[in-house]
Amino acid sequence: MISISTAAQQHFVKLLSAQPEGTNIRVFVINPGTPHAECGVSYCPPDSIEEEDLQFPFEGFKALVDAASAPFLEDAEIDFVTDKIGSQLTLKAPNAKMRKVADDAPLIDRVEYLIESEVNPNLAAHGGRVTVLELTDDGIAIVQFGGGCNGCSMVDVTLKEGIEKQLLEAFPDELKGVRDITEHQSGEHSYY
Picture (cartoon, rainbow, N blue to C red):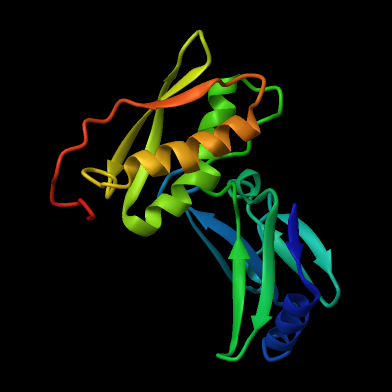
């Protein structure tokens, strides 16, 4: 479920050595399954362990995950990266905002999952997002842009060179194209 790099494990062991005996780490998601999901790692003293917690043993400590966060932490990765600027703990949880869907789930669910887990995080850097409105019988995904995408002069490039390309690669035998239903007008959230 959760992958913790060797460097991150060593970092946790070092941090935990200064904590009371029996302290482990807790990995969690606040507001799981929503666009506002936030992941975190904290200390977990022995008296904070819940019966329903999932426990993942590592060398020198356990990572605990509450039952509500567990489905949203599937494929999560924790790393400890050191570069010229310094060191940083990173937590990547691609399923935090939307629970991972099965490979045989309906196409609309799989498209929405890809949009939420891969496309929207990139658009969010510009204050934008995209939502799937429907899939037509002839294999066209109809999407609507929002936020910073409103009035953006690059929306056609984002749609054709980014979103459509990514979706057609992911679902080559099921999707034929992607169309935008958004009426793009200049507004307070527009980027030029």
